Image 1 (cartoon, rainbow, N blue to C red):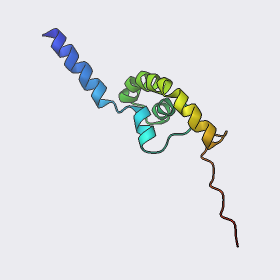
Image 2 (cartoon, rainbow, N blue to C red; image 1 turned 90 degrees about the vertical axis):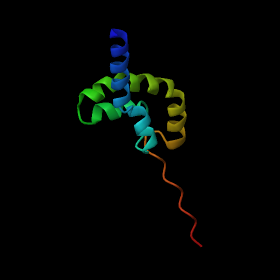
Image 3 (cartoon, rainbow, N blue to C red; image 1 turned 30 degrees about the vertical axis):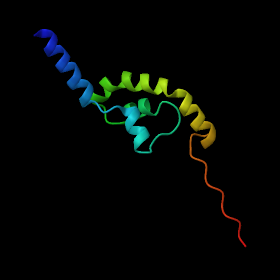
Image 4 (tube, rainbow, N blue to C red; image 1 turned 180 degrees about the vertical axis):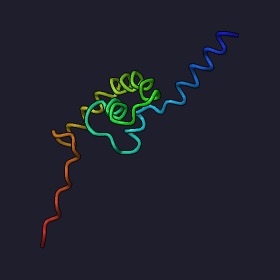
Length: 89
């Protein structure tokens, strides 16, 4: 019975914390490396963001090669590069 209660509580905690890594990538606010950790640290300080921080760090570490490639193609200053203006006739 105690194992079931522990598993249920653990699952509820994990489900209730919105993963900062997934959230920052899905809403387009991703910039630079470790965007989930940045979102957890910059957002309102709460128990959910403290619980989510290690999970965001782990997922951001796994996705680090993709973020590095994205940073290379976007520009060196972590900002999306501006599209080139169309030539004027």
